[in-house]
Image (cartoon, rainbow, N blue to C red; front, top):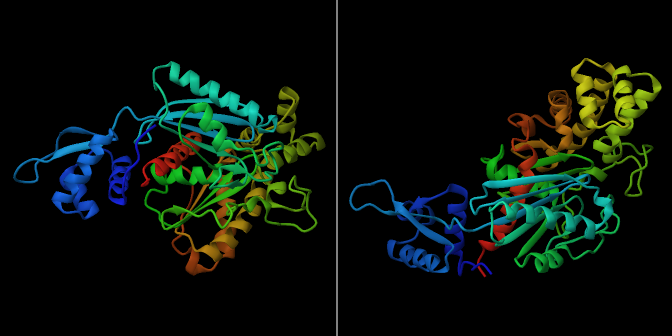
Length: 393
């Protein structure tokens, strides 16, 4: 099992090396505000654990040159981002660089046993390429509410058979390493924070629009999960009291009116009713429609497809406007599979937020598409397990 830092100073050094890459002892001393003698003690102890290694001489700052140190190149994290319709698995190094990445279609409704058999199979394939001999830790994201301390899903609406499943415990036994589990949108927020568009933001919202809709909330640079882990479940905010039924049992939820699943449903209605010849052609050719089909039809100027995107963006923007008025974030990031709809969707969301929220909250508020695409979730999963391992015992 990988060693853990013995105190907060060591944890801080490890996270600085993770987020900033190799650095000199002198520069690290400046960043953590330690005396030279205390820094030497803590660095030597970390060298003894094998978590860090010497990395040559640093550039001269005048006088004797300091030595660079870096996180041990042998460290490997497994990252799995489980979505409603696919599984993404990656291997990263300790600096969270994605070294290998696999994606496989998978319906989360097949249940945790089948899904985790697929995750383990993909992990084995990545190991077989020589990327890792074993894993020092694993981060896992699932598309539903998670009781964070225990790592168990709780009554997830689109995940039958997952309620109370001991994800953290089961995978830790199979993989032989520590495992951390969180909601998938929290991991997307962490990924964008580490290597995406939110690197300089301390307080922001990350909205994921995929098969469902969720929101990662970051306060002071840390994910806010709420008292029980369900913070950010905006897909089940009601937008129409007399609206469509939702899998959660209520009516008129945002997710029931605009998400990947809702968009596919409405696109098929438009195709079958004759309102969209282009969508009708794609439905006849493929037997089903997806958000990608709507995006393609909209790009070709299909009026019905464009209207579906605008209506959906208005619904999402209506909810985000309320969040902005309440939370006053410095940034809103829009991610997930439906962001393939692009700037038509983004423009509708922006219009609603800027129109409905107060000028003090929106006067300098960027609303942008995520920058990491399909690796946002796995990057965040690696960040999650590294945060755990790079914390004091």
